[in-house]
Length: 276
Image (cartoon, one colour):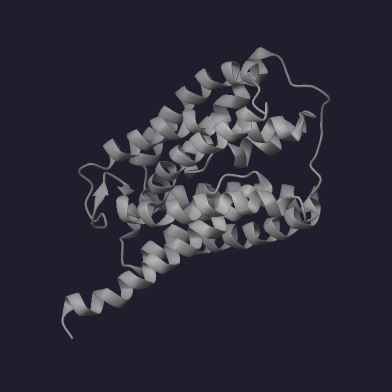
């Protein structure tokens, strides 16, 4: 069997796995109001490893491709939430500038460090989110109102930076952060979906530029953004977001958050174990 023939089954496996990953990510995004990137990034990381992509660029490709997918999904999600009056424009105006700056800095960091460093950061933050979901399935409140303008800007800066580095939408970090301050969950999800767009656009462009001349990239990549994976992931993800939102009204959220938290803990530990 020649090389081309041997690559066909592998390509089919990768396409099928990416399509399934998009479906799962979309369902979870609709069910829990979290960005699909928390599922897409680790899945792509292991898929790319199966395809033989070198560890030096594997995590960057997973992060950049996830960010590229977040751009259209955030546009659609933010539009839907805005139509329902679930976007806090005042908070968004306060958060966007520091989040943008942090996204640019985070992207520069992600494009320049070694892949295992990114994988380690992703694994640790994923475990933190998992603990929060399992231990506090109904959310945790530490204060009855948001901090002042300075404190809010610092929070936005941290969310923007970590989201860009991890390749995730703002919802994964912004929603649980907002609930800490007794922020209404509907507004938290809607505002976070809008914030994700402002993080994802500069981060995607930065990862595309930062990986322009990188060696070992998979075929059909623009910098670190792999167009094949994005093209397969995006349609199934978009299709399943609406289904997840409908199912969310029929399933108890605390139980669902606990299950997802356990899954995230496994993913985080698996990501960290891959470094050793």
